Length: 149
Length: 399
Image (tube, rainbow over all chains, first blue to last red; front, side, top):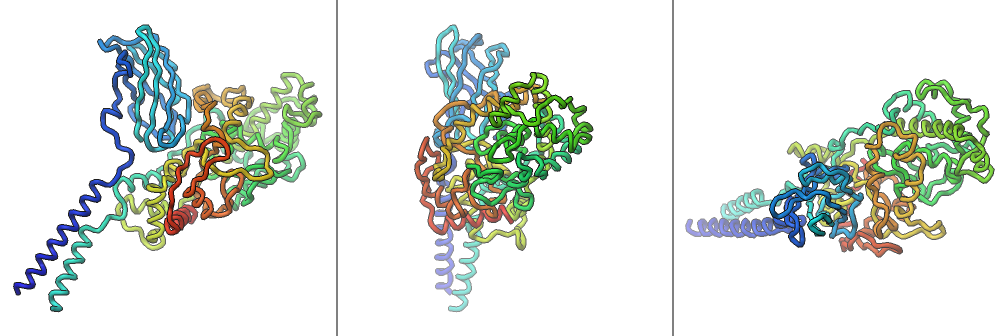
C-alpha cells in the first residue's frame, strides 16, 4: 500500500507543478498596451511646466466611433485659470502609423480656464495620443495626453 | 496495478479539468460581445434629411431604387449594381452601369450607420451619396433637369404628397446639369438661379427618398451572433451555433494576434474610417489615390452638410466640420468595409483586387508596402493553419 501513496503523492506533486506553470504563464501573458497610471493621467503638467492641463470627455465617458466634445482645463502652477489661450491639436495612434480620424478644434471658452475641444473621435481600440500646443500670455507650451481604449 | 493506473488516470483527468485553459479570457469575451449584432445601436435620426423616417418617402425611394427610368439610357437603376438578392452588390470586381467604373460596388446592409460614403468618403450623407451615381456618366448617366422632369411626369402626385408642391418646370430645359456634357452644362448655365434652385431641390429630394429606403436595409443575424449571444449568457452554444475548434482559433486570431479587430471593430466590423493597407492598384484603371482626392470632392459638393439642401441645423455637420483634410495617411486610404456577409460576396477590396478570402488573409499576413503612401499594416507571418482558421471564422459572419 505504501507504493500506492507514493504514486498519489507524485501525482499531486505533478499537479501542483502544472498549476504553478499555468499560473506563471497566465500572470505574465502580454496584455494589450499597458501604461503606468501616470501616463494615462487626465491631469498633468505641460512639458515646460508652464501650465497644469486636464483633459476629460465633456460627458464623462469615452464612446468609441462617435464625435465627442472634450474639455481642456488650463491652470497655472499657482492654480489661476489660463484665459485667452490659443490651442492647436494633433495626434494619432503611434502603433498604427496614422493620425487622428478627425481634426479636433478648440471651439469655445467656457470660463475658469476651461476650453471645449470639439470633433474628438476615437475609431479604434488601442493607444491614442493627443498633442496640445498651447499659447497664452504666460508663454507657449505643449502637453501630450494618452487615451487608451 | 490496475487500481493504481485507474487512480492515476482519475487524477490526471481531475488535473486537466481543473487547470485546463478556458476557451476565452474575460477580455476576449468582452471583445466578442462588442462585435455581436445585438451591440449595434439603433439607427440615429438623420436631422439633415427630415424625410429619412417617413414611410411614404421610403416607399418612393424604393420605387426609384429599382426604376431603370432613373438613368440616361433607360436601362440602369441603383439595383443594377446593388442587387437585392446579392446583398445589394453585384459580384463584379468593378461596377458596370452605363459604363465600367473603377470601383467595386459596396453592399448596403447597415449603410445608414456610416459617417462617410463610397470607398473614399467623397459624400457625407446617405442622401447626398444617392445623387452621385445618377449623374456619373459611367453609372446612371442622367442629368438633374431630366430627373426633375421624369419625377414630375411619372411620380408627381407621390412626390407632392411627401415633399409638397413641385416647382414650375415648364421653362426648365429637358437636359441640364452643372456636371453633364457640354450641351447640358451650357443649358444649366443659361438657367436662372431660381430655376437651378428648383431643380436642385427636386434632385436633393430624390436622394432623400432613396436614403429613406436604404435606411431599412439592415444586416441579418449570423451564426457568429448566435455563438456570441450564447457565450455572453454563459450557455454552451448548441448544435449549429457551436463553433468548431478551427472557427474558435480564427475568432481568437481575429481579435488577438492578427489585429483584424483594430479596424474591423464593433457590430458592423468597421471603424467607418480610411486606411492605407497596401492593396495594390489594378492595371489599366485610372489612377486612384483614395481618400486624399475625396476631401476636395466632398467639400465642393453643393449637397453636403454645409449646403443649402440640408434640413435641420449645422450641428449635424461635425464629420464635415472636423474632417481631416491633409496628411500622408490619406494617400490610398480606403474605407474599412464591413465583414458581415463578406464570405459570400467575392471579389474583395475597393477594385475587386482579390478573388477569395484566402488571398485577402494572405495579403494582410504578408503586408506588402503600398505603391504610394504608407501601409498601416504590419506583417503577421501567419501559418497556413492560422490563415485557414481566419477564413473559417469569417464564414461564420455569412451563415
